[in-house]
Length: 492
Image 1 (tube, rainbow, N blue to C red):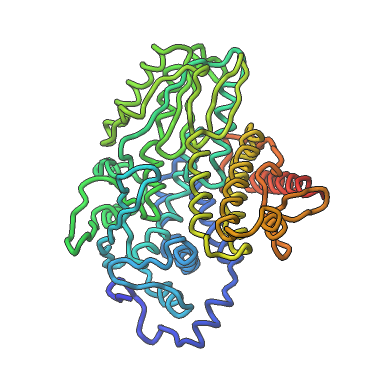
Image 2 (cartoon, one colour):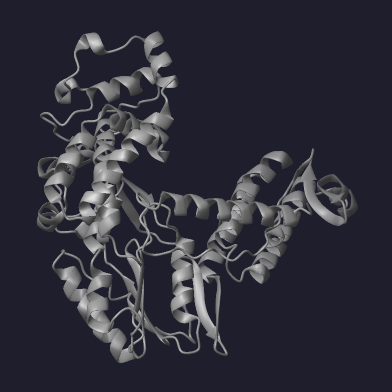
């Protein structure tokens, strides 16, 4: 670790034995409680618009030993923890983590350039750039994200659901349903997509409007990236792959809903144009009573985005009638004879089918147990995601496709065996069910066994730092519903 950003003496860097005992014996409950107490105070100060107090509390948090510990832990839990930045460092040991906590400091902080890699976009030939900061820079971003997030949550649009605490795509889906399910609901939908949102946000706007240490924010924004051994400057946008980037993007887009409400809402309930706004990250939909109203809203949004250096994608931004349906977050929303039904989108179905097909093709030489384990992971994740919508027929259809793929997989392994022999080798009877793909007590899950459970709608005016009891009770209700549905599916 480069000690140029540290106030830690060499004598404070711990030995292997002492470090392991310290890191592994940290009382994380106390850490979370201490950090959350400061975040709650920041939230209350934001609500009272005491901005000097907000700044002081943010300083306390970013210089808190507990906050530094939590920042390092979150970097270590991230999916990219095994991917190093330009310095090649990884914090894979307790010693490295505790030393990182001791050295984490804003004094003379200078962010290193990110390492740029390109990953494939599903179903497309083009690739998406991802910038990978060093572990130290990730921890600094995580630390300042702890101080910025209470501000972002308190000032956020109530109908924004992406990259926010205790909010999910299912909450966004439920909100769209509430806005469009009635006979008197809006019939037209503006489907919005922001062109290169993360890559094009105006730096001057961020430095002027983001309430955090400007010198640190400038380091995050201007560090640049290295690709093919060349250093490239960054003139706009936030780094995709940066820990704090989703928060910065959300703050940039917040205010869109308030602007629309000021124009079309008369009081809390009166909304004659039936304009409603729902956003998840940089994807959003706006309902309207007519195509003309939807076009008018699109013009307002274009002006709002232009100030921030952004623009709508002309190809992906469309206006659709609800009877024709539209896709949002992997679901298709469409009215059939006046009734709104939400189903998994064709694109989502094709994607999961392709993933399952690829797993089976890759598993030509795998054991049956290995194949079942790999498939169950995908089946469980996809069925849980679509558990709250009209998915039963879709689940049965995919189950049939999986059966056919597995039959071809089994026949290929034993081309000279009879169908009867192959059936007895890979499919067995479990209770009242025949044709269960299983081996040594491990059964392949069926999507159609997933019980459809309605998602509990979120109270939009709640704050995760002030309404902890509500969110805890809601999380328990969702967990109980999920466990109950799983129990019913396996016959408990």
